[in-house]
Length: 79
Image 1 (spheres, rainbow, N blue to C red):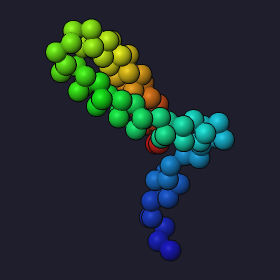
Image 2 (cartoon, rainbow, N blue to C red):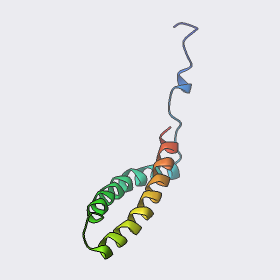
Image 3 (cartoon, helix red, strand yellow):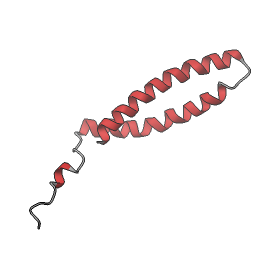
């Protein structure tokens, strides 16, 4: 075994606590659901009905902000 070999522990991902693993798993399930809803809302925002567009736009803004926070946290846990 070569003495100059890089420390393998620095290349591995940190071990998540039970709570963190549970949060990671939940995010892994929730993110695709929000992404699917965003696609649906994008279609509704093309509607000729102003009230549908207004409602979809408000929800879209809310979801994209939520999704951004979830993705950031997912990335933190995935490292």
